[in-house]
Image (cartoon, helix red, strand yellow):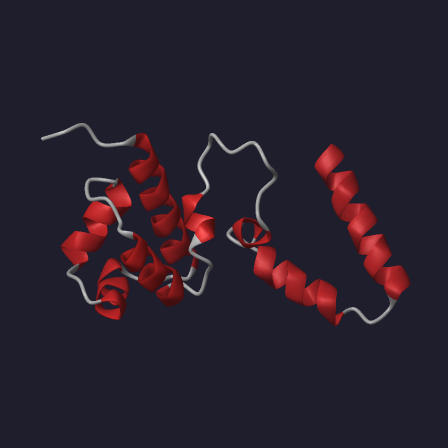
Length: 119
């Protein structure tokens, strides 16, 4: 058996991270993309490489852009916005932020978040 490519491992880890963030089982994802849950396990471990067409199916099932799974640790750019949404609580925080009607209050919340990041 050939060595597993580190990029395949990283892409599989991103699939697993997104699936878990959505609280989906491997079985649920497998059914959605037409494979067995064992195949999903292999994809997530990087043991089996994910084809481009399968990655598109996975991205659709996980409600994300295919490109978000292709970014690797070698990428030096800032995270894509969809990557940021994988952070636990990010979606809830964004929804709460958008529900604030006062621009002054939104600015205050943003300033507080930045201050917390500096701690």
